[in-house]
Amino acid sequence: MNLETIFSVMSMLAMAGWLCLALAPLRRPVLIAAARVIAALLSVAYVVLIYRGLTTPGGPGGGGFDSLAKVMILLSVPATMLPAWIHFLCFDLWVGTWEAEDAPKSGVPHWLMLPVLFLTFMYGPAGLLLYLVLRTVAGRIKKPA
Image 1 (cartoon, rainbow, N blue to C red):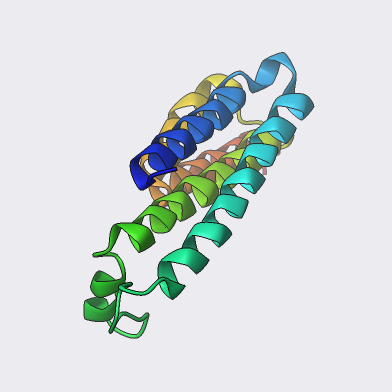
Image 2: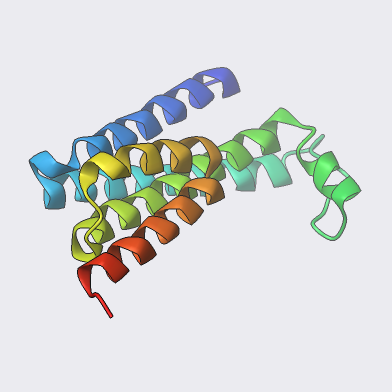
């Protein structure tokens, strides 16, 4: 399978996970579990692809994690950029599963979770930050001082 096809399949798989989270109120435990299975599948793809990308001849020679310039070298090659993309898809989805699971316990209604999930999907840490703020506010409303 070529890298473009893998990119498309992984992106569509992640979208299925996010759809599960958007529909979570319908069957929360099952849909969150489905999204977590998808995140696990993305993890498997990541491990295989990052190993191949870093060990295949002609890979990103001179790349590393100890400077911005070396990270840019690592990500300049499609065979290592693709697993980096899958890394984002996987971790953002996993954070989304935690948010969707935690929200009812924290008193955050699902209608407020939809923009949180969208932000987590699109901008990872921004969505997490919004969720943490909503969670804190909901906790204070739930337990007045």
